[in-house]
Every structure is written in structure tokens, then in C-alpha cells.
Image 1: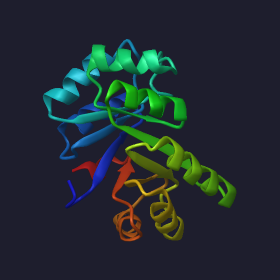
Image 2: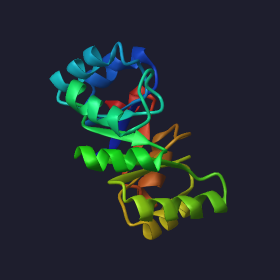
Image 3: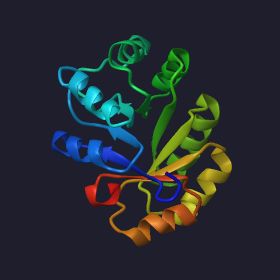
Image 4: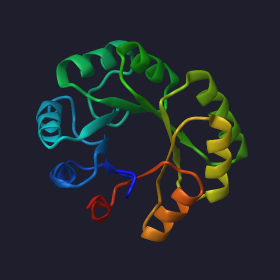
Length: 179
């Protein structure tokens, strides 16, 4: 995946077939509900995808450690994405990888996010928006975990700029980048 380190960011159910059939290895799932999750996971796993479920975006998912344990046991999720430190801790307890999503809206938010990441120690961080090379560099240096740049990235030059600034991966919802 490092040749083109893109993670499919699935925000609408109609994107699921495209993500499943794409060349990406990982999918951040932000669409569907607890009622459709079984079929989605079976489809993705059949195609060899690793699915990281965004616990705040998929409908009907609880926001506690029991929810994470249930998702692992019942659906075989490969990891979670969350803005909540408690969910990152729950993922660790369940033995699955976690991606902590943070928003770099100003300097105070970046400083707070770095402190939070140092304390929680997620496996990776997804920083949004992903269009700030200086902030990507600083965050990567100070947080000390693999970094995913996501949000507002619209063309190959922006993908390359994020990667050149130090991002390990780029999450993107535009299906043309998944191929």
C-alpha cells in the first residue's frame, strides 16, 4: 500500500461496492447501521479489506467498551476510528488497532490533540483537515505515532504534499483515488 498509501473513507453506503472492489487495503467505514453492518463486513472481508469502523458515524453503535467488544465478536471489525479517548482505550482492551481522529482547527486544538495522543497512545492518528503541511510535520514529530491526513484533499498534488510533509497515509472519500 505504500506505493499509493490511500485509505478509502466510505461516507455513503453507495460507495461500499467501489471500496470493496478497489485496490486499497484499508477502509474507514462511516456509513451504514448496526442493521447493515454484517453484510458490509462480509463483503469487505471477502475482498480482503481491513475495515476500521468509525464508532461515532455508523448508526446504532454504542459509545463504550462493550460496543467495541461486540463489534469485534459479532462482525470481526479490524479496528476502530474515534475522536473519543475512551474508545481508543476500549480498542486496546479488545486487542484491535485504533485510529484517533483529531481536528486541527487552531493552535490550541493541535496542542490539545498532541497531549491527548501522547496520553492515549492510539496506533495511528487521523488529522483533519489534511491540507496543512507545516501542521502535519509538527504533529507527526510531536505525537510520535503514524499519521493519516484526511479531509478536504481533492487532487493528487494535495495527496503528495500531505505525504511529503510526513503523513504515512491519506484518507480520502473520492473513489477515483481508490483505484
